[in-house]
Image (cartoon, rainbow, N blue to C red):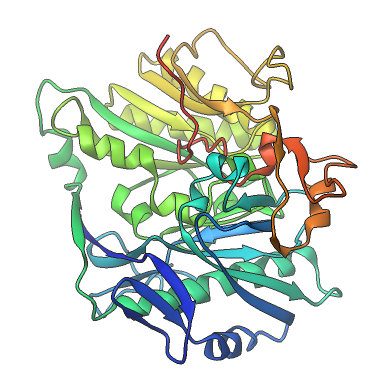
Length: 428
């Protein structure tokens, strides 16, 4: 399966009379977009705004971030199962508006959304301070169930990303990248002598308000399954969960997963990247056993030498991570785990809720309990009072001058467990 990704560079977003791309500027017809989104009568009010890199702007509480894209084959569309028919994606040509993003704001569950600052210390921790963001601040009816509120805001974001992405349909991309994974059997037989490696991609699926979608299906309903990496890059996986902001995999992060891109970069040189196994993170022990057993079986059937395993969230999902590790290592299959840490504000506590001596190759994406201070911003999109209640904040986090003292976990993507983050360390 071969995917050509073309990138149309966007250096600014402005409101205008027509939604289009002119040069490297994206213009958005505000009235037209508002009309499209408020066709959903569950939306009681909607504010559209723009946040640019370097501006003294704060977005809170952030729900999701999405990269606008359009497929050019005329048959398939973006975000299958939501914005288009459930046709297989991951091949053909797709254009992405690189440098632009759709950010959805709106209180859903009240404590597991996040903060994006476009300048100051907070901007250093999130990759979304570098994108030009079209922000949707959505207020929905209060008499509907929480899961409907989440769905309403999620769909508004996807509709907007599709609407904007279509502006690139007749625009020549500034540059392109080609990604290809051959059919499984032939792929496994390539590059004799190189280790066969796959990526075990754990998706957050711990129940209501903690779900991720695969071709529109709630991931908690699936058994672990093999999927082409290009399908994930092409919008087959959509975020719909409310885990702590720091390690939430946004839809944008799924489409730009750096583990997948790095495996492609090393393919045929250091390893043979044969594909991705999607698995879920469950609540009950029986479900965890089922998914880890099935994942282990798939890896063994594929005759792999090693896998990289990433998780989403912390605490309960740590058990899924370690369970997958133990079963694979027990079969002689090497694992590398990618996670973040909740090691206490002093960094002295146990980092994960579960552990095992077989987990001897672990990449950390940072300590989410680290306390930081965010400076006041001239403009706040959303509700600044959410700082006192979102995960990582506390009563009094929001100070009178508008600054915020909170744990790093309040910042969207700050300790992303797929490495879609700005944190790094110097060599020892």
